[in-house]
Image 1 (cartoon, protein in one colour):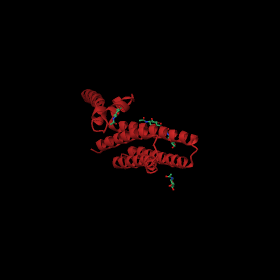
Image 2 (image 1 turned 135 degrees about the vertical axis):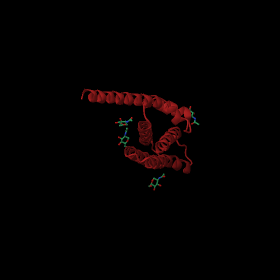
Image 3 (image 1 turned 60 degrees about the horizontal axis):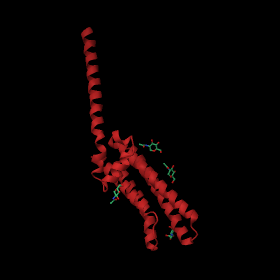
Image 4 (image 1 turned 90 degrees about the vertical axis):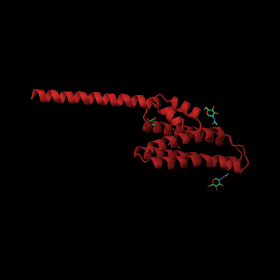
Length: 179
Ligand SMILES: *[C@@H]1O[C@H](CO)[C@@H](O)[C@H](O)[C@H]1NC(C)=O
Ligand SMILES: *[C@@H]1O[C@H](CO)[C@@H](O)[C@H](O)[C@H]1NC(C)=O
Ligand SMILES: *[C@@H]1O[C@H](CO)[C@@H](O)[C@H](O)[C@H]1NC(C)=O
Ligand SMILES: *[C@@H]1O[C@H](CO)[C@@H](O)[C@H](O)[C@H]1NC(C)=O
């Protein structure tokens, strides 16, 4: 009896050792995730900066990193929409007002797709995350296109460029999650 419980105790400690060893090893490997993600993106510098700015991201697993990337993108989409709203408030020209009004709808739609992407991520449907990110990205380009079509200067091209880089990060992480 005594030897049996000693044996169980040994197993327990062995398990504990393996478990902590395992999570320790995973902790080490996840520290390297940001560089290995960013290596695959369009703008590595941007990727390292934006993910590096999140303290949680440094030790995050790929799944959490994707959550962070989607969240960052939502923040930027909403900030861009806030800019559109304030431009709309100041604008007198009906044509521009119409354009800004449509733009705001586009960015709201982009938010909806990103919200959806978060849900797909939760249920580990990584292809759907990619499709939702693509649709959200497309919505952010509609605004720019309508300004171009009207031969008008688009005041948010910098924001849109940042957004395209963020969407790229989401797609890269999803592709890695698919493997
Ligand atoms: C890449 O990102 C860096 C840092 O945000 C920025 O300074 C640079 O202009 C970007 N280059 C391109 C091509 O987007
Ligand atoms: C994403 O944002 C939501 C709401 O702002 C927050 O509750 C959640 O903790 C964030 N998740 C990550 C991984 O940053
Ligand atoms: C704004 O959207 C409406 C409805 O989709 C469309 O009919 C209109 O042409 C758009 N306005 C501009 C300036 O693109
Ligand atoms: C982003 O904007 C949407 C409305 O378009 C809002 O429902 C959502 O709470 C906002 N999220 C954040 C994190 O600002």
